[in-house]
Figure (tube, rainbow, N blue to C red):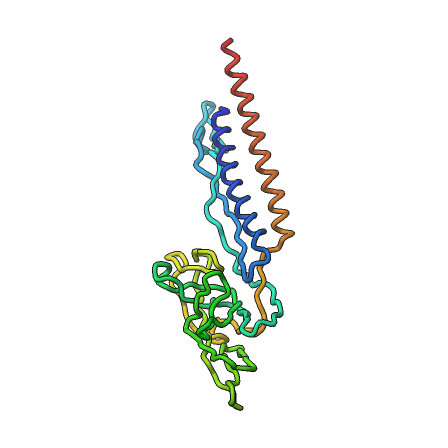
Length: 268
């Protein structure tokens, strides 16, 4: 009866509330470098089997369809959209983006992901030691480490990831290292830990390392940054749809409550 409707609507409110959280996070990161938006996937719950199709009825006929009453919904997973964001020109000396597949590798505390994190953000700069670090709150070092001495001019990053420049007093270009990239069989299985960083999981599979422009790996674009791939218009439409669905589930609870009140009043 109405009790089932109450429980089903309650699962809908819970799942839609979580979807609202995800949409809000997408919108909050619309200007975050290389941020990847995510969506919520739903699945229905178990069904009460009131009558099975194909059984013989009292009149000797075969029932053409059964009677199944669903018990609501739940979130099955949140799925990342790893489509590439737009390229934005930058004046940063070590800003770069990956045009195609791949993640930059950076060093993180050993208790997280065995000391290696992965990111699409390319807002790098030098720390006080001259090492290239990611421009987030913690400044993790790029892996493998690349050190650019003080006073180097005319810094260039080639499409295949080689960083070079002219050292003080020199006339020839010197190479300071080469950027390596990583990719995953199932990037949606990566675990986000904040700071534009991801960790591999059993769901993502192990990292596959390689060099830019080789095999499936994309090219490095110097003095460009990858923008967030969140489309504000799409997210606002999803926000409105989620809000309306939440309201309809609330109305289902109200209707079920009124039905139960009518049944309760029959005893009077």
